[in-house]
Length: 356
Image 1 (cartoon, rainbow, N blue to C red):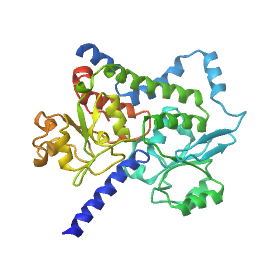
Image 2: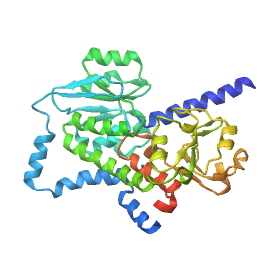
Image 3: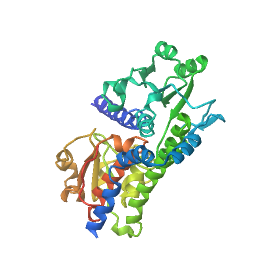
Image 4: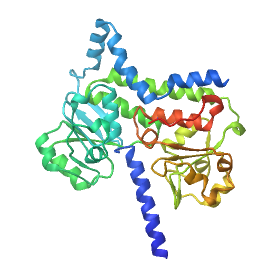
């Protein structure tokens, strides 16, 4: 019996690790509703704003920005998520992208022509942006033969690769940028760094500014709320064992920006910890949010006998959100923000709806 329990616990931990890697690899009532619609689907809004605004600018402005975006006169230096400095002599022209969030940013910057390959997981999962690309491996291992033949200027990878693979890339002279992001500030860093890598710093700054504005717009609407006006929120990552998100996670940032209180962070927990049912009942959240990787049906949570006395369940304040917009460090994180804001404060932002 003890062995079976340990196996279940192990599987749950693996699940949350995969959930974490997804962010690497693998968003007056009438006036408020109008305001949130202006920033809704911010991943789409920010992307389209960056893509479309340039076509409406004057020829002189475009010429100026093209020069500003170009890094031909100086070398390019960026620090990745692990703090490693990557130096390029010029903007990368051939990039293999193993991280879906980085691919989303590159797409928003109109630079998909710089991508020559992606990870196998994105292809197998039928990620839209991966369509038509060749796979070069995944977080379990890199296809060195294919990588060598492709001779990329840069590989954008994720934390957790085997040290032997990283050493081999170094021996081959292939530069490696590792994505490691845990909070909203890291999203801005990734956007700016991707812009530098592909020679589109001005465009990247505009995209980052769009994301910041969307977060500020939501945060400003709840900034005057008193503590007692902020609903207590529980994000249910997994149900057996019960797991959640604490400090230093995108989830915690989304809850805070949306005017809620993360009960797990309030308990001083960080990352993706197990959380006891006893603590959940004691802290009695007003709102429960869960990812579709747990369930697509809120009834799974609403009918969980362990939660029957919890306010969120009694009042049917249980909401299901798509995983990607709340876990990937790209401009699409604002879609997650809009969903959280509506789930936590519908009286300010309007009725909840899932945004993929």
